Image (tube, rainbow over all chains, first blue to last red; front, side, top):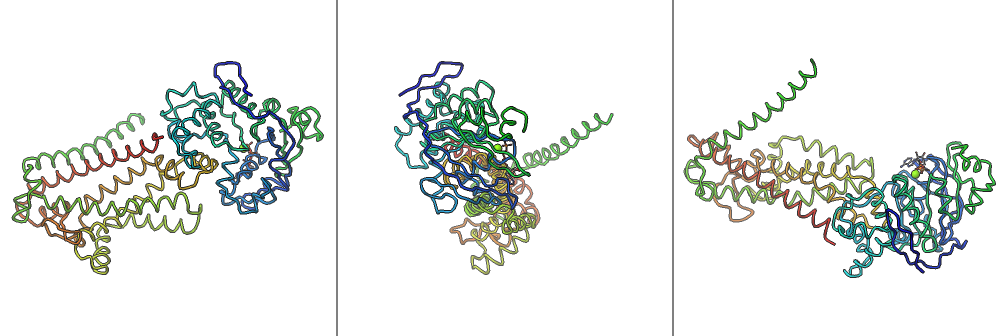
Length: 278
Length: 277
Ligand SMILES: Nc1ncnc2c1ncn2[C@@H]1O[C@H](COP(=O)(O)OP(=O)(O)OP(=O)(O)O)[C@@H](O)[C@H]1O
Ligand SMILES: [Mg+2]
């Protein structure tokens, strides 16, 4: 099945989707996760399931540990020497915190998009071929094909097809962020972690990235951190609300997006989504 | 008008420095160019350098520099990569190494000469040779080179490192394909500083590569470096001034050429890293 987007200032290409469904089958199971930096706990006792093919939005005030949470899911936090993670994250029957897993393979299966677009200081093409080569794709035709597909998926192909060998740093912020998404997609991950992917973009570029995320639903499991509640409401199937209790972040409420926004169980959630707190 | 005073002062300082440099350069060119000829560049020196040329000396200089770069480039880059990318942040070992490098960078070159003589020439038995001289120079330029490369690597945005790792790339790929090209300007700067220092060095070479002004036949032969030759001509040889100036002119030209070459080679390397598919 292909989806055709209406053409705007930016155009999004076609994307072949799997069955666009979102079933509550856990893809990642997080149990009693706590994160501390140099002994200071910043996130405590978080348990939730990330469902396969669904978009889960993480919302909450600044500093409550959303980025830390996200980077623990692909073991990126393990690279920060003073950070320590306790609890369990089950992925594919492995506990990625305690079991000896191949982190490079794990990160290929769980991609990440950062808040600040970070295309490598290489050509546009090489931004995409470098990770592919690292994971063993050597065939030139296959490489070219995958590059084109990934750029079409994020709607960047028409904008850059004439300057694939130009520097990626010469792209606009929105284009850079879409290139970063393409770079993650080109490895065909199962899960995509996005840390405020639109916060550095203007409303139009942000709208393009948003509709791109929307189209990922069904084919990828997406976890997105956003401060834009309206955006969370528009794109997400599930929402998790984090809050600071005594300067320690914790999960207050998790559920289907409509429930969290329309009928929250916790008064804190209600105040936050109504804009009365945070 | 403090603002005008300030402007005047900084202009004055800039002019003074540039002027002194230009004067030095002009003096070298004016006094040296008369004695300079193709024969001077290729011929062997005669009468302690008063006559003849600097052919063998030029060859020795390049050989010594070659040895120094061959040793210091990989070692220096390796150490810099370890310090910037793999050592634990704020770790004890890293701090100690950095401190030692900074101390070593400030040690006068004559001390390196004495060390090189004791270690390479005598202890390792390399004698007065191009090898001893080159290795001594390598010791001298490595500390500055490492610190310069490390500073270049550390200044790189963390976003690229995390981005690379988040894509499941190994750290070595990230270093080789992304971080090193990004740090290339700092690496060239360190390299040029090293080349400049090494080419202009006398004190560290007198006791290690020696005085012999014949054409060297192997790495174990003694060879006189250009800077040593200039020193000798101007201090010990009466009537050697013209030849000294001409040699100095060759030395300056050589340094400029080497810098241009290093820049061009790095540019090519970076381009290949960035654009090849
Ligand atoms: N490398 C680090 N070292 C020490 N403390 C850190 C580090 N990174 C984050 N923290 C602390 O952890 C807490 C949570 O940070 P985190 O970046 O996860 O918050 P966040 O929810 O993503 O905030 P924002 O919405 O502003 O991005 C903060 O108090 C922060 O100071
Ligand atoms: Mg954050």
